[in-house]
Length: 239
Image 1 (tube, rainbow, N blue to C red):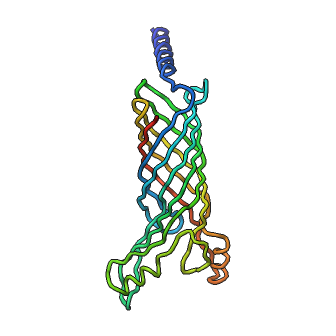
Image 2 (tube, rainbow, N blue to C red):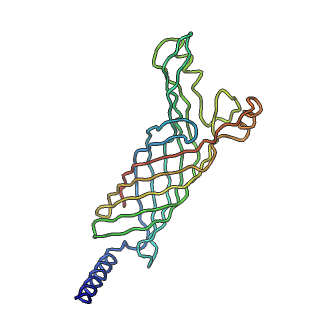
Image 3 (cartoon, rainbow, N blue to C red):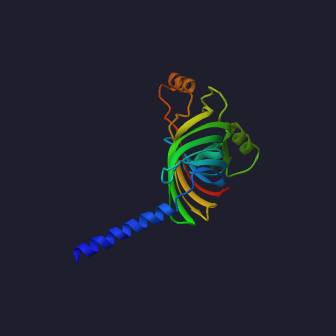
């Protein structure tokens, strides 16, 4: 009886593997357009999560005779940053305020992935690799929960370009270049419609060395290291 059970299990496993191999993705290139939602923050800086948008394109290459292994690269426009609640001193009174870093990047992800199709119409995949980004626009902005000339003047004084090369210690700005590691998991229906979840961890310290040195010289303390972190929910269409 045990031998019969073992043989039945072996046959079931073989049949399952054969079925999985039957639905392997075809080798070669495919292309995808995508858009989605970012939930990002500036790690090690006391900032909370900020929502943003992203859109981009991908090219995937399924390797020949690699059983679902593929390479992927793309170009994205993506919004990152963070926000925090602060107290603004205005005419001797404490006012509730919010400070936001809105950081816009062009980003190039390069990853290796693996795809598995349990049935022909449905595939699951995961991918991992580096990304490289350049900041193309960004702003540090203060918003105060009041109105009036004095409020607008304080908001203007605390609103500036996030990537401007400045050593002004009252306006802490970032370098434009960023790089890090990211992964995605996703599902594809009918070889076209995709839903993906992903995380990116920035490895670049976003403060310039010149700004750090001046901060040490002026205040005899070091700025904390700041890195981008981003969680994304993305929809894609494969062509």
